[in-house]
Amino acid sequence: MLTGATVVLPNGTVENGQVTVDGTRITHSAPETAQVIDASGHYVIPGFVDLHNHGGGGASFTSGSVDDILKGIHTHRLHGTTTLVASTVTGDMDSLTHRAGLLSELAEQGEIAGVHFEGPFISPCRKGAHSEALLRDPHPAEVRKLIDAARGRARMLTLATELPGGLDSVRLLADHGVIAAIGHTDATYEQTVEAIDAGATVATHLFNAMPPLGHRSPGPITALLEDDRITVELINDGTHLHPAALRLAFHHAGADRVAFITDAMDAAGFGDGRYWLGPLEVEVADGVARLVEDGTIAGSTLTLDRAFKRAVTVDGLSVEDAVTALSANPARLLGMADTIGSLEPGKYADLLLLDSVYELKGVMRRGEWVVPPQLG
Image (cartoon, rainbow, N blue to C red):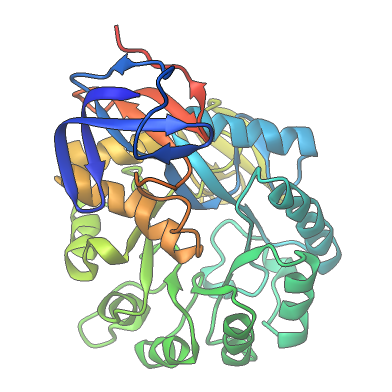
């Protein structure tokens, strides 16, 4: 039983609140033998949910062993991410299907929430940190091959919907219950609207790897921001987005259509140095990851506790809106809002303790402390 805290609930924030846990779940009342923890002066919020994550702790989800992947997952749990989707990067089809099979096993074990395929069906004009030699058009048969390889655990696929086969692939993804995400795209405004009408529902790291907003050529950013069917991913690390751009997106889309993500690579929670992102070498310096070959930003070293604190202290968001973007919205997108994403009886006891300056002081996942309370 956590008592005395400021508790962020779906319908508002409660001062001097109480959260009770029995086993793996949040409950209405605690058993008589429950341990009581005085969390006065602290926030209790839901665990973070990351839709887009390539690794951490020096370990890669895109190329590492099972032990490596588990290390990366644990690193992000230490920073408050109690649920994450493991993201791949562009590779050849054989390596991607093999990786999908390995990740699907971890999803079946409950270690991750599923698989996100970022590439290879993206635009060479907006490839970012993806190998151009391995890019391909999104033929529906190949998209289906990746879905099948994930054995029901494919959650999302990012594609440039303007490429040949793009719209048919969006329809295929929607028919199979997989999120079609528009990203790494050179689409026009009109082409993006067409993709949304075909069933796309997410903008992969809005602003990044797509044409900039123009007053005569509004491009994909405008179409993605103005349509209520789209949830926009934002990387809130201070490198990928200027605070004004983030506030613009948040103001226009509204709190219910934003999902903060990490887009993290191996160096998240680990440190500067040389790494590999798929077949491309990355140099991380001062926490910023860039391709060695041309300096292109290559994912991030972000963890979601930092994204949360920045949202409140730099971007001026309310704690409630930040929680919505980091927990409730991604849980809804994943179809998991009945079990995670908010503090409600019957849901998993995935919760975080934050102090008055939004520093992480405790992480609970499924009723077990990953980071024991530090309330001194």
